[in-house]
Structures are given as C-alpha cells and as structure tokens.
Image (tube, rainbow, N blue to C red; front, side, top):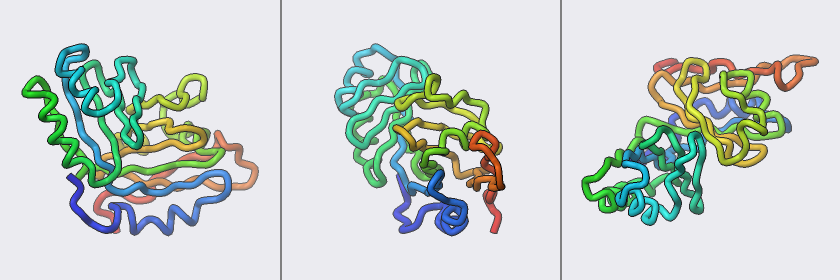
Length: 202
C-alpha cells in the first residue's frame, strides 16, 4: 500500500510542471493513488463476486473503464484489470477483493511503485497525442477509454477521464515526468512532451 509520505514522488518537480502550464494545458501529480492489480476468470462466479464488492462491473470490452464513484476499474487484458481509487483506500480494497476471490484469482497492491500525472486543459489531448503511438482522437479514444503505451520510454496507462482531462498512470522505476515544448506558431499537435527527469536524477 502507499507508504504514508506527505508528498508525492514527483513533488520536487512541481515547480517545473507549474512553469510550463498555461490556460491551454496543465500538468500535475496526483500522488499515491490506490492501485490494485486484479486477475480473475471473466464471467466466473468469482468475477461476479468481485464486481459486486467493487460496486462496478469488470469491463469485458478491451481498453474500457468502469466507474463507481471515485473508483475506476480499467481493462488491461482478457482476465486482468487495474482498480484505481483515492489514496489510502487500497488496504481495505485488498482485503475485500481477497474475500470475494476466495482463492479463485489474485489481487495485488501496486500502489507503492506507481503514481499518476493529470494532464488537463483544451490542448491536453493534442499534446499527449504527439508523444505516444496511441490514436487519441476523441472518436477513437473517448472518455471511458484507457490504453497501455510508452511515453518517453516509460510504461504508462493512459485514461481518458472526461473532457478535457487525461490521467497518466506510470511506474516510478525508470519513469519520466514531462514538460511541453513551447514556441511561437506551434499548433497543439506540434507540441510534445519531453523528458524532465529520470529515476535517480537530481
């Protein structure tokens, strides 16, 4: 579970994130989101118990998200999901899922080695689209969709969390924060995210 620190893993980079923000795009960390990796056979009795416990169905359509309040359940594979919720909730969720699974699947707390970055603003989607191979056009990646990809060589899961915001959940190991290219005359699709720091950097 999250380790109880008062600041997020990227807190020291907050000034840099703020420095590149404007009224078109903003980047901020959402520290310590609770994240549970879930494996269970879809359509099984155990999957039904898990969905009832979570208060949200386990999505069966690839790359979609189900929501129950502030809890999001992301499809990662045919029998794999990621449960994301507010910081501090993961301990109770882990016990709840273990009881629902009753040995017919697995739930693992992944909170400690991950964080979340929120990219928001009218240009958020266009900026992000210039940095990863996913098709982020609203027709292909509307709110309620998620996808796994690489962003500046870091493994990330991108969630379209409603317009105009997008959430990027990333591993801390080898991860990268980002800043926006700026320059006169740049259209949104010409701006990109470039590495701001790497693990172990000062």
